[in-house]
Picture 1 (cartoon, helix red, strand yellow):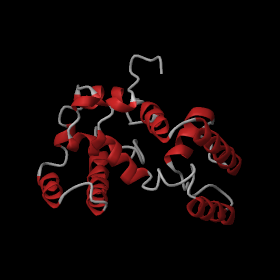
Picture 2: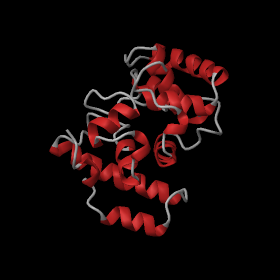
Picture 3: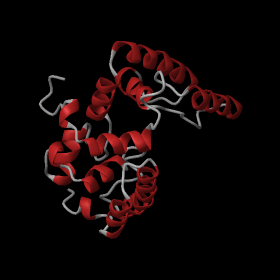
Picture 4: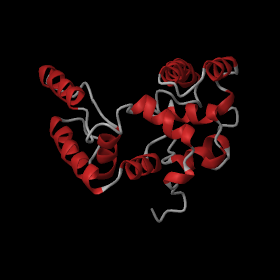
Length: 196
């Protein structure tokens, strides 16, 4: 939190928070750090396959992994991740969890945290994010290497994920019909036109 690039909860635009919650963890404010059904379904599938094939991760689980654990894909790490997430839910408010998550998450191209991502991709501060830019940043999160806007393949993957994200925001009534149509009409990669 002492970093010059750290962004407080109030500095993060509501459009960014809504987009992240809608696409990454829509039950964030209702669950205790993990979605029990999803988590155990993923664990059962992983046990059947004998390796980690599904995550079932909430924002809190992702934060726990990024703060305390390695990126190794093992059952042991998933169990430790669960205990770390339970700890985080008791130690922090939901707003603090979102704040920390958006300050350490990987947005691709070695950009960690929302302020660094805004500066790298758009040459702006987070407060100046447009809805289109917030949505585009959010769409990097599931797999920033796969959705890399600096490569032709990444832009193609980003296009399809962005369309799904728009539909999800509209379904949750966070975008009106006119906003949905507007965002679908503007060039989908316009947000990244100034990207490095």
